[in-house]
Amino acid sequence: MKVEKVMVVGAGQMGSGIAQVCAQAGYIVLLNDLKPEFVERGLGVINKNLSRNVEKGRMTEEQKQAVLDRITVSTDLQDAAEVDLVIEAAVENMEVKSNIFAQLDKIAPAHAILASNTSSLPITEIAAATNRPDKVIGMHFMNPVPVMKLVEIIRGLATSDEVYQVIEDMTKSLSKVPVEVNDFPGFVSNRVLMPMINEAIYTLYEGVATKEAIDEVMKLGMNHPMGPLTLADFIGLDTCLYIMETLHEGFGDDKYRPCPLLRKYVKAGWLGRKTGRGFYVYE
Ligand SMILES: CC(=O)CC(=O)SCCNC(=O)CCNC(=O)[C@H](O)C(C)(C)COP(=O)(O)OP(=O)(O)OC[C@H]1O[C@@H](n2cnc3c(N)ncnc32)[C@H](O)[C@@H]1OP(=O)(O)O
Ligand SMILES: NC(=O)C1=CN([C@@H]2O[C@H](COP(=O)(O)OP(=O)(O)OC[C@H]3O[C@@H](n4cnc5c(N)ncnc54)[C@H](O)[C@@H]3O)[C@@H](O)[C@H]2O)C=CC1
Image (tube, rainbow, N blue to C red; front, top):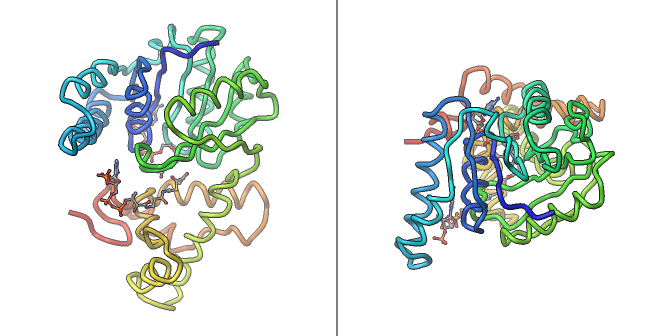
């Protein structure tokens, strides 16, 4: 099967990045969100990223326009009727994702693959909302999508070898590096990363050090490009909390309990960069 037309559901920070890299690789892209203004916001980010590429001499103005021309705005899942692949990047919530997948299953052509960019939720459970679990797969991009090389590809219990192969090839066509993992909570990336971020939040909560000091230790001491609290703000504190809850519930092990300070920030609406305030304040 050849993928030509892709729908990206969710035009937030991940969905817009995924749409950008797909369009840059020559795919026809439908960028879907609940409201036109949400898709416009995503398109604005894409436009800015592409303009930076033009300024840096990595692409011409014509090439930028050609990439933008390959992206169409959508606010109706019915637009999935003619696509070969859907990559869902809506919020990290099983009810929302199951609902989207159940609808897509009815709308998308029989050959279409339904992928989720979930950062921790079970692909097998998302697949169970459809009548095509063999064609459901995890395609976990990293943030910021245009920069990060990795795509973690997650096989659900019923994902077919053929579908895995199509997605692996497609990932390579985006100039990304696919890594295969099995379907367990948090996969590999967030099983390892998120408890570290949660522990950094505990060190702040317990007054071990200031936020700046915690970040500095991990940046200068471990050569991490961002300290863990800066990275949490970058990922989104709501997403961090959803992931910790998935690990906690999925393994039933208290070592994954989310830090109360993380819960407090999310309840306050301090979700990080995207709301202008998290552990740090953003302009
Ligand atoms: C939660 C999950 O499920 C999984 C995840 O994604 S976890 C998060 C994984 N991501 C990380 O860990 C990111 C860690 N941080 C980094 O790697 C780096 O800080 C960074 C790449 C984000 C920025 O790098 P930096 O050197 O600090 O800053 P900067 O020099 O401004 O940027 C480097 C390049 O990235 C680009 N860039 C930075 N942020 C970007 C963004 N949001 N979108 C697109 N491009 C971006 C810049 O334009 C720049 O590109 P050029 O050099 O080619 O012009
Ligand atoms: N933020 C990160 O660093 C990473 C996030 N992810 C995953 O990607 C997904 C999206 O995360 P972000 O882009 O950070 O979130 P975000 O909050 O920036 O964007 C989510 C978008 O989905 C839209 N949306 C919600 N319900 C929808 C629906 N029913 N139909 C269509 N659109 C809908 C929202 O309006 C919003 O624009 C989540 O599953 C998250 O776990 C994966 C890798 C990294």
